[in-house]
Image (cartoon, rainbow, N blue to C red; front, side):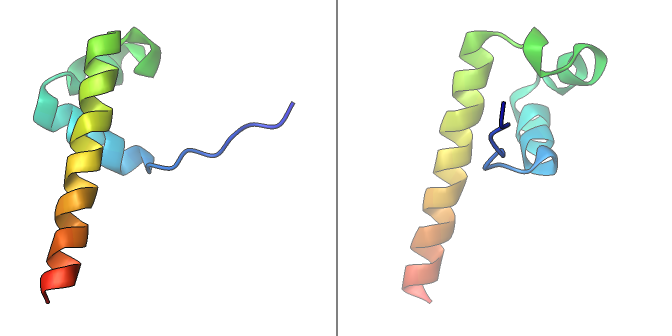
Length: 60
């Protein structure tokens, strides 16, 4: 079975988890311990950061 590589780095996910307030849970119990809502919010925030970075690239 091949394992799919993650698109987001572990460091990036951890930074977002800290920002969203569930880093301690991830640190203590792993990614499987977060709620579906937290996972969705993490993805939404990652997309928002990517969109902001792209917008910045286009304006410079």
